[in-house]
Image (cartoon, rainbow, N blue to C red; front, side, top):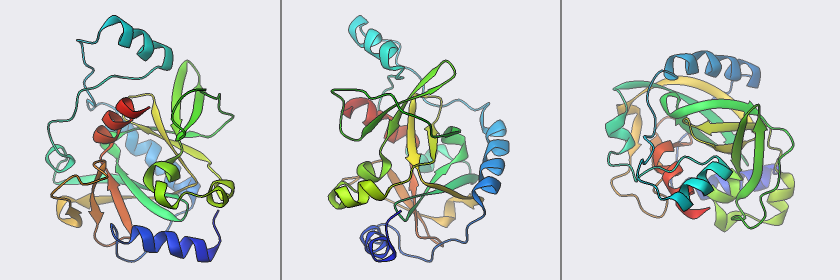
Length: 224
C-alpha cells in the first residue's frame, strides 16, 4: 500500500471527483460475506446483452479471451438503477470506489495470473477460476494513469478481483470496505461523460466514485 503521504496526495487528486469524508470500514471478511449474500439476489437480474451480430473473426477472439462483446450502453447508470440499491465499496491505492451490486458478477480472491502478451499495459493477466478465464485489470492504472508511478505499482497489494457483471472482466482491488444501501438522491450524478465515461457520479457522503460497470465493460472491450 502507498504510505500516508502518497495516499493523501492520491486522495487529493481524486477529490476533484469525490470530496467528502472517508467511510468507516467493516472488516474485509464481513464485507465479502455480505456482498456474497447480496449477490445471490442480484444474480437473477440481466446484465449486458451480448451483440449477436459479431463477425467470425471477432467471435474467435472473444472465445479465446472469454470476452463478452457488447454494444455501447443506451441508458445511463442513473436510468438503469432502481430508486434504492445496494453497493459494494472497495479500495485501490488508498482510493475508495463503489459499484452497484446489480452490476457485480462476483468477488474472487486473487491468485497467480497468467500473462497476456501484447495486450494493453493495464491488463495484469488472466485469472483462472474453475472453467472461467477472467481478464484482470490493474485498477489503479486504469483509474488514475496520470498518477501511476513505478513506486505506486510496487506498493500495490491486490487481494481481490471484482467481476463486472457476467463478463470476463475483473477489477483488481486491495481491500473490501463495506456494502451499503444507497438511493439515487445519495449520488451527485455527472451530466456529461468527460474523460472518464465509466464514472457515473459521486457518493455524496463518502469520498467515493460510483462506477458504471456496463459502460466500463464497453470501454474495456474497445481498448484492450
